[in-house]
Length: 247
Image (cartoon, rainbow, N blue to C red; front, side, top):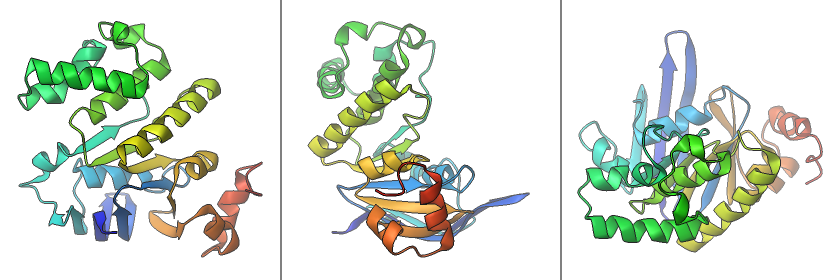
């Protein structure tokens, strides 16, 4: 299966630190690839590079076989959905206005937007009666469903999720995990999912990418990581997630 996203010797640094060391990574179509690791290891930097919010210092990024450049990154962003931890909803817009924001920007008709909106409400189990509400009037789980609908509005080829469930309480998080996994399977969606939680990585990941210190330490299944650790840090990280070391 060909890769939808390919990073070739991509690096990123700032004045006082290296955020991402020279990295090679392929994201396969139709799979959920989970990037996991401690805070500051480069997980979010990886997503921001792919969506073009920051530029690499070296190396190249390919999307669907084409190199990502300053000239085409704006167009490529329309083919990528992006969800962050707090949802990133605009507080002055209703749920409906947040979801259709990009669709309106690219000139979709009212009929197209309404039809897609109702499809997404059904897909994400979000009541259309809540669409007139503002983010402050929604629960944390509801806000994340709105954020997910916004990310899926233009039927993206790639969905980037940056710790989207980290701020939710355990019961809401478990319900959303179940729904998200069903959505990914139903859409055959290509997903790059960032988390620091090993249990979440195991639940979602067709493939797990473990990072530390701005580099990829190991890529594979949780069985690979546990039974064939490529670095002492791999077992250290797994054992630190108490209760999961035996998985």
